[in-house]
Image (cartoon, rainbow, N blue to C red; front, top):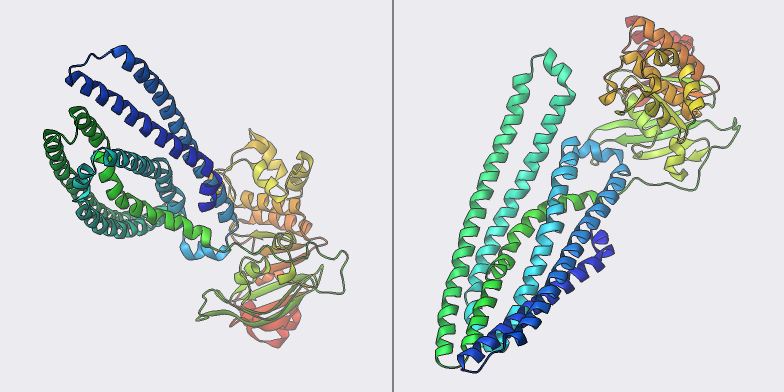
Length: 567
């Protein structure tokens, strides 16, 4: 945010300059009127033509300056918001995979919507208003000091009280706002879960359960909001009371000074006009701490996103060595990993294995043994906690991360499709893919004929997360995407587990086709699907408990044999 603000700082400087000029024009006009009043009261003849032309010029100039001030202020606000949104969007795309797991969807969405709205309010309303008030109070104060310093001394005598009150209120408001933001994160998370899990919710009649959870969070939000409103209202009342009392004393003191002849009637009139101009700005400047601290909670939450370290870009290795058959495609040695920093729950414990280029390898094991975690580490979604991971002969730490991920295509049982057309979802596999390449990929994935039967063909919308298509159709689109990417390593996370027999046959044909000439790594739940794998690794307790082909593992009569016997 600071960079965006500094980059567009020239617009803010112009805004400040025009604000200062506008206040000077008002003061000059005020002086001119005060002079004419004093001339009339002294009995001398006043020629209005002498005053009207300068006043007219001041009005025209003031109007132009006010317009330019408004333009500079709005452009500064808009450009800062644009730069922050763009840079934050890019930053979010580069955050580590673990960040979204840790913070949750609700917190991120709230920061992108609600907190960004507060940021907009800060740059478009609070900051410009604060600067205008500061300039107005400063220029008017200098003018009043030149007129009679005792007048301004009376005005500011009671404002230390206002500062103390404002400080206490703003701290309490900031505390309540912080709690409110946490409740908003929780509400968004609950609502998101209810919408994403609508099928399960309807199937198990969980409407009341979800409703009670959301209502409970909303009640907390309302309670915090009511407390915040009470404090804000109290601040508004106190501001008006504390502001009004010194003003009354100022008016009485101005009359007293006029009576003693220390200031003229015209100067008293000028003082009254200027005082009315700075009456509310003074209170706003003092109580602006409330708004700044309240909005500051949101700005800090946005800044927290910026402070998150981005995913490493990696080292100097940008491609695999062509036709490399001497080195394994993947080699792990004593790899350790835990999802928590404290290492309280170790997922992988000194795991070692190697996967030869062009061969089919499978990982099997019970639920929660870490098979899916292996895939995440292979693609660099998380960094290993210890040990060595080599990809095509090079340490994974030396790889450029984007280049390393180009080595992998993944097809899993949980397919994600972006809202959009079938063409757009397939084209995700390759940037600037041609029409011919997209069609060829879909033919290889056994989905082209189905697409052509649709009224809109490749322009058919798939709906959010692909809900307008069946599981088998979504799966084949993901395979087409993998075909288009044409990566040397194919990761398969039981892609036929959630489809019917007819769809499974078509998916299996597509997988057999895409597997030709590639290194294939399979997470298998049905052991009958991996009988032909060159190497099968049995994962247990975060380690490789057994290794071998199907026949060898059955002969060991160990974990694999027991799993196979159970079907």
